[in-house]
Image (tube, chains in turn brown, yellow):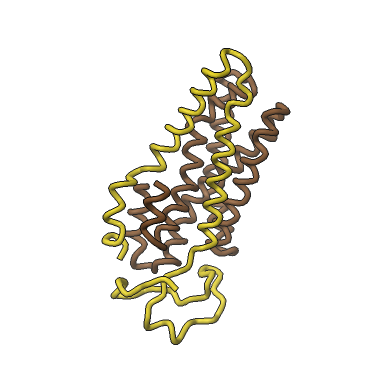
Length: 145
Length: 104
C-alpha cells in the first residue's frame, strides 16, 4: 500500500496521508476492547464502556477538528494530528507498564477524536488542494482507500 | 483529473486501510498471546504501538511535503495574499481544464 502510493506521484501523498490517519484509527478501534482487557485486566463490560466513550470522542472530534482546521489551515491541522497521535502512541507502552488506566483511556479518546477529525477535515483539504470542482471525484477515490 | 490519474492504482489498494490495518494488528496480538503462554499480556501491544508511531511519523513527513496544484496560467499572477485555507498562498483552483494542473 505504501509503495504503490508513493510510486504514483505527488497527489498520492494526500491519499496516503488519509490512508495512514484512518488506518491507525480503524486498526485501533478493531482491537480496543481486547486491548483494554489484556493490558489492564478489565472485564468485557468495562472495555465496552471504553469503546462507547471513545466513539463519543470520535463524534465530538469531527466537529472540533473541522473547526480548528478552519482557523489553523488544513495542512497544519493534519500535521498536528500526526504529531500528537505519534506522541501518544509513543507513551502508550509506558502507561501500560505502569498500569495507568485513566491516562491510557484519555489517550485513546484523543486519538479517536483525531480519527474522526481526519474524516471531517479531508473534504475541505481536498477542496483547497484540487479545487472545488474536483472534490467529488477525488474524495470518492480517497474514500475507497 | 483525478479519476484517470489514479485509475491504475485504485484497484490495487482498494480499501487497503480498512482491511489491512485490523488484520495486521490482530495478527500481532494473536502472536503475542501465544508467546505469552498464559502469562502477562501487558506487553503484547507494545510492538503495535511502535508500528503505529512509526507510521504516524511517515504521515507527518508526507503532510509537510504536500503542495497545492497550480495551473500554468496562474504562475505569473500568483496570489500572495494569505489565505488560511490554503497554506501555500496559491490561487484557488476552479478550472474547466483541470488536466493542466501540476505541482510546483
